[in-house]
Length: 271
Image (tube, rainbow, N blue to C red):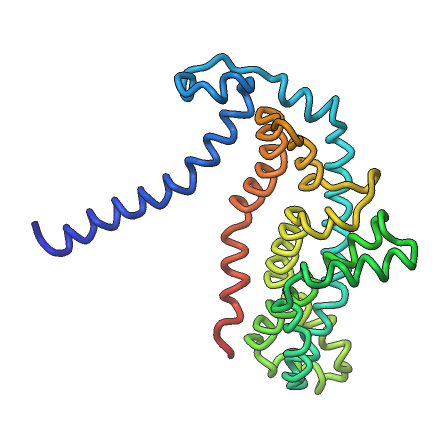
């Protein structure tokens, strides 16, 4: 066997093992969502079983998960939109005016563990009577989304040629006008990438919503925890609820993955 052929065989086997290790838990999750709790514990019915939709009926009807889906969508969209509104101009200013120290301070928020802020946040927001509302959830999600957007967009703006803006300034535009008419339309791929990643974070966030949400503002990741009881776990309902949370994000990721890659690599080179 030639060395190159041996490498191809090894690569194929390695990729197969990696893909199976990643996909197998997802397949088991989806399959378990169509099983009863008795079938889930029965190893003989791991592959051959009688499917049931009772778990999804529990999730979508009895557990009021439609409201939790609406809550998650509202928090994710609002946090992403506000983070983009603040983060894109901030990233442009930091990139064009060499505000590297300010950028470092903003990016430090990505290093601070979110759990270390939950107690101070809860104390402050409870005194302001904001705990349990959507506003506190949106603000807490922006704490991570905003630095993420600034980080991505700074690299994207660094890769855009400054000569285009200089030509716009010569033609009579102000810096704000050049940003709005020249730079902003060219940065749409980067904005889309930052927005998608920010939305995915907000959709999947559990820790902030667990502490700061209320009964009427509960999001999907927190609602899933209701299937875990003190004495038992409703595995069928838990897997159905997890599938409802996971599949929309997976579908979005599959359709927009090339845009995410192109947006992240667009700022890799300058000029």
